Length: 87
Image 1 (cartoon, rainbow, N blue to C red):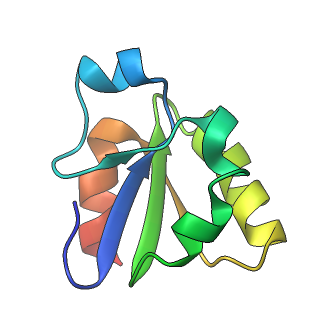
Image 2 (cartoon, rainbow, N blue to C red; image 1 turned 30 degrees about the vertical axis):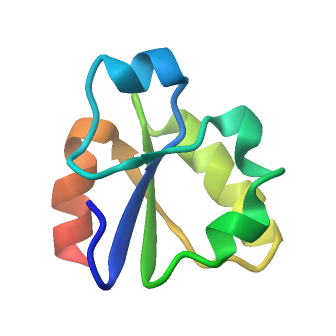
């Protein structure tokens, strides 16, 4: 989900993402999150992270928050759209 105020970033692998993902989600695998933090910081609006269960998105949240980037752990990719709507 990418609109004027929310972006979902799926931190699963490219293969997992290809098998299904939240509508309009961006794919930035967890192992790339730290290296792409500056790019992520430029994202407008709320950033909602997701993965398969919420574990990897929680790790991504810790990485990004340690760099001063405000973001939320939306949990699993199929729940992330609902999480984004609730914010």
